[in-house]
Every structure is written in C-alpha cells, then in structure tokens.
Image (cartoon, rainbow, N blue to C red; front, side, top):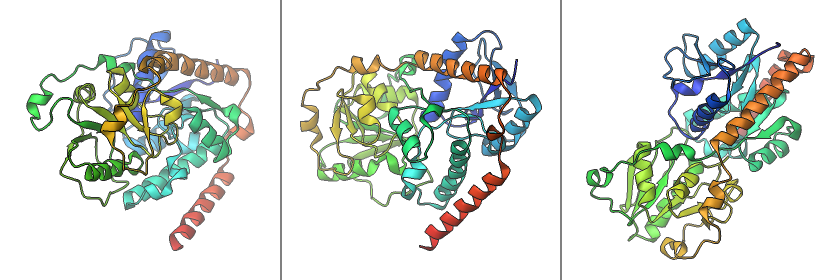
Length: 384
C-alpha cells in the first residue's frame, strides 16, 4: 500500500476562526466522500471532535497546541510510517507533511507583529514556513493571489501548489438568535454598520475607528476576539459598539439586519465573512486589497483600506453591477473537499509507486543552516 496520509487534527483544540473553519467544513464534506476508515484523523486526547461516519479518529499524545503538533504528532507519524496533511499553516518540523498555507502575512507584513507575543509567534511561524517551502511536499493554498505570493516571494515551484478555496455553506446551518435585539437594546435593526474579525492589525479596524470619527452620526458594531499580536493605539469612538467574541447565531443576525457589512482588511488569504454576509442578503463594503477583488469580483462596494474618508451611506446607495449569487455559486465546501480528496489520493499513489527520494527527506544540515540564517536576520533587523 505504501505510506498513508493522516489528517492533523490539532485545530480541534483551537477556537474556530477562518483557518479552523476551513478545516472543519472540508472534513464535514470529506466524510461523505470517503469509504469507511479510508482516512485517519489524529487528534489530541482532550480534543472535542464531531462524530464522523467514515473518518477514523485516533486520540494520541499527552500534550496540546504547538507542543502536541511538534512532539506527539511526529511520534505517531514515525511509529506508523505516515505523512501528515496539515490544515492550518503549520507542519511538524521533523516530519514535514502536505500543508495548507492560507497566507504569508508574516513574510509580507512583519510590522503587523508588534507585541512580544506577536514577535514570538512570527518567529515560530517563520521557521515553520521555511520548513514547508524548503521541502518537496505539495502545498495547498486558498486563492490564486496566495499562490502567486508563494511563487514570487517564497520561490516555490508552481507545480507544488494547488488552490483549494474556502466557501460559505456552513452558514446555512446556523440558526439566528431571534432574541439578539431584545438583549441589545442599544443596537437597532438596519441602523448600524457591522464588522467581524479578530482585532488583528491586518483586519484594519483602525479604518472603522477613523471613519466613525469622521461620521459621528453613524453607528458601528464590531464583533471579534482580541489578539495579542498587535495593539492599536487609537481610542474607540463613542459611536462604536464592541461586542467581543459572539456566537455564529449572533453573527448571522447582525449580518442580515445591518446597513452593510464592513470588511476593510489590508491583507487576506481569502476572507470568508464577506461571503457569509452576501449569503444572507447583506450589502458588503470591502477593501480592494490582496485577494478580495479576486474572491468578491463586482458583487460588493470597494474602498481603499487606507482612506477612511468615505461616506458609507452614499457608497451603498450606488447599485452593484454583479449579483451575489454569481459569486456564491463559485465556492462550495463540497467541491473543495473533492479537490482535497483527489490531492491526497494522487500523492498516496505517488508514494506507493516509488520510495521517497533523498531530497524529500529531512535535511538536518540544511535546516539548521537556514535556522541560523533566520536568527542572524532577525538579530540584524532588531539592531537596526
């Protein structure tokens, strides 16, 4: 049979944001394609995992988070002669697998990581990205934009990269919170602009803060968890209501009843929330940066991410030239799961037909040389 590919289930012990959503929804559809126990999902012992009909679940290891991925998972891979498929930007250092690289934000915008924790996170992810691009395993990414960045900036051969995108159909299963507005009397239906996302630098909520100052009569509602990679120094205007992390039901309710959904990101690998908003009939105001014009085409209103002087009421009054359904029909978790399945089976066939070449094995000497160069580079930038 040759070596098998197993699925890295570390994301089941993380909060569900974009990358974890990608993993969960593709597994949901992949389970419908597979034969019984055709693919194994390896997870930490304490992970809360949905019931799957055909995906076999193995609980292994005594650690969590990055330690589980870098110690327990490689141990399992070595014991069973397997290779991992990794959904969320990282791979085991000592047994690099097929990896979904959603974006290379850390390489394009290192200035977005300003706190101590943010710099440590960038250091870890930089090492991991280096390991991935120095290897020969296939790489999956989510847009043509991200693929071109991997080719041009990271010098990855285009033959190694497959594009398997995100989608929005999970939102159809979400039940709206019919009591939301009763519980939040300070928020009125159809009288607010809504934004969603982690409060990271690239989400560009500073644009909303500045726009709110310029247009104090507008009401803005922001939902999302805080992050420790970046801290904004702007003071929140009084016409912004910050809700923190909310349920999917609350998000759907807020999207359906807003004046428009705001997505001013300065950098995205894909961007699921605008599709979610379009699926419930909301108007969307998006930045024109990164992959967003590729994904959203002409179905949304565009702004420049560094120009907050925009009258949103006037902008959303302009008719849109493309219907939302034409965009929504392009993206499907079912289609993405089918592409992923084909990617896995093709690589398993390749592994069965021939032994791994020496160039595919972990080159310890080269790795530590790259590691040393990275440390020197970081030291030089710090001293500068």
